Length: 446
Image (tube, rainbow, N blue to C red; front, side):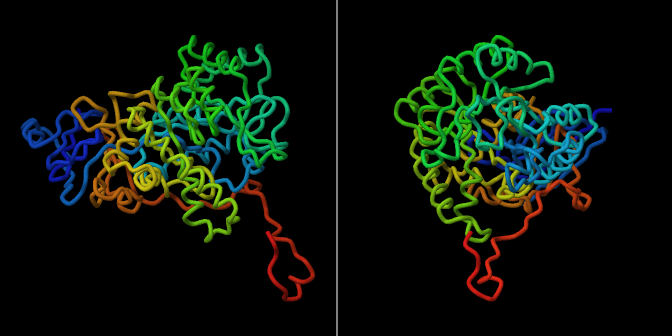
């Protein structure tokens, strides 16, 4: 028997950027069949019906977080990700973390790269009904050349380290890109920019030649697999756009040439500035080095104008939290990128929400299926206590009252308490202990 759910007496925010309106929403099976005042009249007589009273609530599409690393497990450092994560256990822990996202109103994510390529396994388990979690699109290992990534000498010169795969030269690039459809990659991620410790003062630099990036995109697109690039700096963003990448992460530090290339090709951009914003606003509370706070603040402020120009030119901006690190733990900050868009980029709350609804569907390759409340769409729906059209921060987890995924209500009760896993975290010895500190002098210099 078809399951029918009527969400009534709510305020409908449809996810397209239009103003909210009073109305009901009718779901049959996994899809929405009616939205608005006429929805209640569409209920068949004498048929079983579940009712959700949304009086005082905003009814809107579930959020899409287009940059979320479920296998990193709120890591505190790269060594932890690279060397402490076991294969099967990583998948099990990622499944636990997926439950946190649902409880925060996130019904769809991209997991761009994962340790042991476990995101693919989790996605398949969710789709098979073995595990409850958001809709997922995912990559496998992130591709880097000999110089790439952000781990310096922690990354081996060849093979796999953590979530990275080193490829050098034409043949290795072609072989690895052609391998990706076999485990089921929805996307191929390329770390277009990277940083070497000796040259960290220069920031991230482009690690690939134009010919290499062109080759990646050519082979991937021939296989029907889109490509996404981690790009910081003007040259990396320009080369990635020119190569024909389909989604850009960060895209900070653009110059006029890079900006024009992205606009001409209308490549969606997911700035993923939540990590930086959290450090800027709360770094003093967690002991972040002040120089890092200043660096991240400059990255946000200096990128705001370019991001605004992308928006004004019709380039889709997409929300992504980069959850998976201690600064952006799962289930806590998935609304935060929308706040960044409002505060720094100058979007209205409704425009910012669209980056996590209608535009989020682009990242999952589900345009016309999710991200909008309209007849025929998949019924990924949340009910929120408050008016996000006036203040996007009401989308914080504590105000999510109902979540439906494909028309089925999600249990928002607390997850089972989690205990420590032996060998999963790097033990800390503490700060430097000088004799002066030991005998009551000033604290250690970090």
